[in-house]
Image 1 (cartoon, one colour):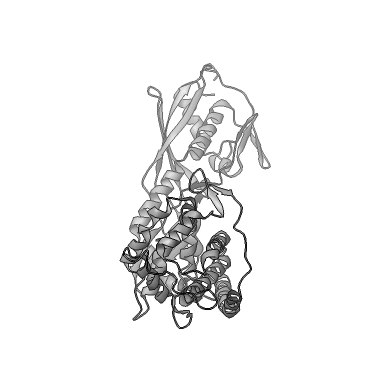
Image 2 (cartoon, helix red, strand yellow):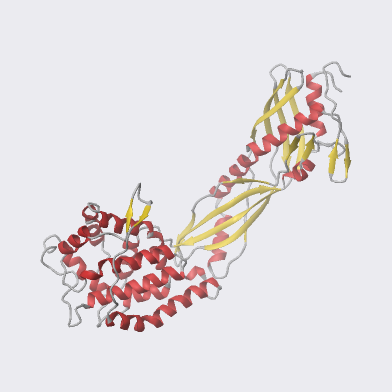
Length: 465
């Protein structure tokens, strides 16, 4: 055995690159290593965080296109090779040089285009803006007007419940507009020749400060006791509930369906904005929100009343539309309808094979009470590699443009290179190297038997040869 600290450290380092020893680093990375009660686990991969949405380009016909790299991990760590060691016994500083001939970087990606990351209220209004010659219920002034009533709604439990439900499910309601059937019917579905744009403008007029106590929101009820406004609102509600269920957002669908049940007893009357706010403040919400905006506590639901004939008729008339909504979601799931045409996220996987530059592993060496060297690596540093990703392809015309933009995304390549080096310098690898060095300085090399490595447990002393 070496009898000096520097020779002991050097011998241990060299043994990690010698296939004939149990401490061969590439082998221990693949299979692990056991010595008595000490077990060094295999090191399959090193994970690191998602990138978040990175914008690749913004141009017609796609709009803004971004990519989010998720489930990132670096593997094939057994490709490490030795590039030398320096150790100063006076300071205890140790620096090992290693290089990876080919690490594997893999993960999953999400491509998004025209992502709806605002509010469903604004998105729904923007859809109505696109109708030539129609009123503009989605104008900024009307959005501002709608938001101005939030402070009043927040003054009572029912109002807080309604706003909370909307914000809880805002993302799901935004996603509903990626269904072309729903989006088109939201724009154009008529009730007695009038579309959503008409009724939204009617609401806007009634909500003006000068009209809130005099102009009816829902118009004048007909001989059934209900108005066109009520009928159209119920039609839109049924469509929203259907598309949310088809897209797997069942809680959002339930929230959308609960509102009409909660307000139904008053819907046969002509209501101004002030009277509607009065109804809300005096009503009991289906649930009570406690201990923060996301905590829910069950309460007794509002009593159900028999569904009137006009509602049953609307359900019958809408059945073909709801079936078309379902068919579109089925076609998207089966790849019959390309996701790139819907605005839905596009999922896939990626990989890259990367050779690193020489990396420096820095640490310290101390002696324990028995005079044995104890090595602890604490940092890895070096130049970032160039990262060229290969994506699993998806159908359509968007993929070639994503691929080409990704190839030119030098900023993203630089970020990924830094993150890969950072992952290689994670505690998992540094601890593995430290444990392996300490095993090598504490044991004589043994022999390999099959896949199990055994070696003697003969502790060194300072006066051993």
